[in-house]
Length: 369
Ligand code: IPM
Ligand code: MN
Image (tube, rainbow, N blue to C red; front, side, top):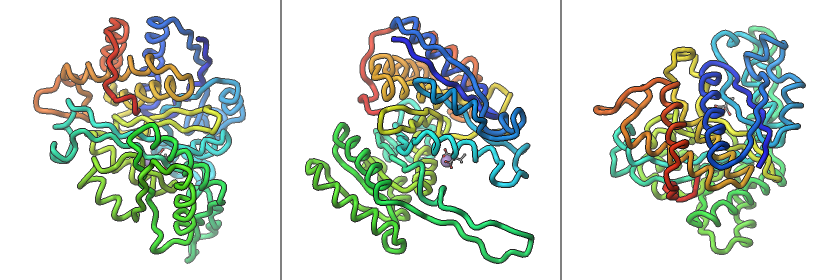
């Protein structure tokens, strides 16, 4: 198979971890006989510096002419004082919107060997395997905000806006995922307060008729936040509005021990996707060879699975990551009593080595990531 991948390293640790995804894809290509070519473009702060805009037209063009997109992370203190329409984060929101990537899949899978890195008790964090399906191109992130003029402004508005069609397509995607997983769907909302949530609920109930095998549950977002850390194993697929999904996915990452472990896929209905770690650009550790590259590497695995249907290849990456963790290697975000602390580059090298060694693939993730 031949595929062209647009790589947008972005800012901060994004640049270091993007190298990891590329090295891993190279190793997979060599082992399984595929050709993955990569082309780079800027996004976020790096794009502001080079082109005075967080999402240059040529970056979008490259993405549109590629088979998939890998993205590192955006943002940093250097650009924090810019007006909101010029901030690096704006580039990320714009690329999601421009490419129509409405379905954000954030799998939360606890690695057995990382149990002691989780702040939760092992008996709670053990065997968690859930998938947050976050609506990504609507809701509070995209309602037209009121303009802020002058220093004495006393009123400000953000709008939570959804069309019926936008809710229907994300809910349908979540039902489809539930069907290939454990057939349980939790829809998270705030229907005791928000009108948009009441419509969300109605649509979920309507869609449920098409998927009678899926057990459906509605949960308020505050209760869901609590249950995620008290009974995380009770969840299979969780579907929710953009901002709720943003918050819940950071919370859920702690089950796995570190935000540095969580990959994500942002998909369009035709399977085209952008793949990025859930974590941000971590300016405090940028350039220090300290970042955990595993979320980025696992995002590349999701790309192979979701955009290219290369399941065995994706599992070879997941397995390599698992083996490296089992062998005790940890980046510094995953401090353990007995682990061997390694830097970003060494972690990448360890995963690459194991892919190249090519041990037989046993589907350890349950093929759910
Ligand atoms: C994420 C990030 C982004 C978001 C930020 C950087 C705009 O937190 O991907 O979760 O809020 O969506
Ligand atoms: Mn976030």
